[in-house]
Amino acid sequence: MRLITRADFDGIVCGVLLTTKEKIDRFLFVEPKAIQDDEIKVSSDDIIANLPYHPQAHLWFDHHITNQIPFPFRGNFRLAPSAARVVYEYYPPGSFTQYQEMVEEADRIDSGELSINEVLHPEGYVLLAFTLDPHTQDDEAYWIRLISLLREKPFSVVMDDSEIRYRCRQVLEDFKVYYRLILNHTRQVGNVTITDFRKVDFRGKENRFLVYSLFPEANVSVRIFPDYHQKGRVGISVGKNIFNKTSRVNVGELLSHYGGGGHPGAGSCRVPAENAEEVLQQIIQALKENEG
Image (cartoon, rainbow, N blue to C red):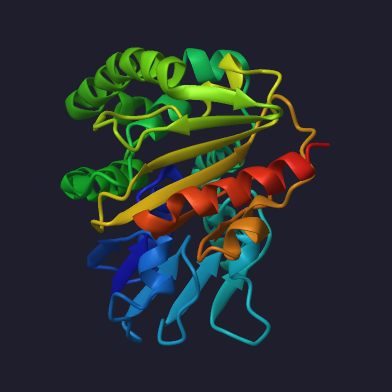
């Protein structure tokens, strides 16, 4: 059986849980847009987690508000802090006792319930989560190995693994570069920060929460970046400031109008490059109208 998931920390923890209960021997890591646009073939031999619904899947697990469906299916859906939590609750009580702390951390990280200190000086699960970048397909072997390590080893042993230690050190080095990039390519318009990375070729790991500590008066952020999966397309991600929770916008619902989706507090979409500026201005206007 194949697991189809997203290569963020939530998707990896889903992988840890599901591989303990299901006969999974293959993995496919994709972005939500690939499911939405029917770019991959899905069959009854597939389990989908942390991604939009597909009718052919054997089981489906998700928690994004824009992905809920109005008809019965096999699996579990709930507006939970993480998809891992949805998987955790699907199986009988006590099935994942040894992974309870890991799921709690997935809840915190995916919902952005972090302190400023954890954002600026990440450690433990938070630092490990930052080693994951869904856009870096070359890391697939690492993603699969991490699922295995987290499933079979105590967390302290995982963090002492030579590859993990190297990747964590590299993340902290990448963040030094990313800090300067955020300052150099971000402007604030009212309550909105706009980070334009369309002409930035940065392939290191990003700290998606950093902008909120640097621009505390803004309550929502927008980031524009090249879509590395498909030429001629631009990605737009939006997130509410996790330290300034005054914005009234439902991010996932807003971005669903542009072929994307997500949570009430964060989401993304992909649009043709020639339409990016028009879509960007519409999104910014909606964010300003729902300032708080």
